[in-house]
Length: 143
Image (cartoon, rainbow, N blue to C red):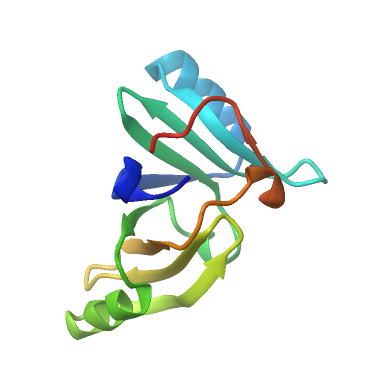
């Protein structure tokens, strides 16, 4: 599902909101995006949505925890997240979140560049069923 080798974008901007569903509604009405995937927890908390427009994917996430002071970050697919973290540090960045496998079939880490911008290094591991991580697919995901 999230495999750049099959058409999913290799770079995806992620904008963080306090209210993801409200942001989705605005982006659909104002800018013509269409929601492809939404992950809503059993308690009703929505923390993840993916929208697309003209082959472009926009990821929305929930602001909070370690990202309370962050408005956006950029997800970049790499072949090896651990090696990507090492390269980021060698280039003057730092690691905020060490590599970890996620239920949606990727391995991710968060690094910052020397200016403090945050980057989510992501490696596709396997396709997963969105239902396994409370995801709901509204239309086909690119790739």
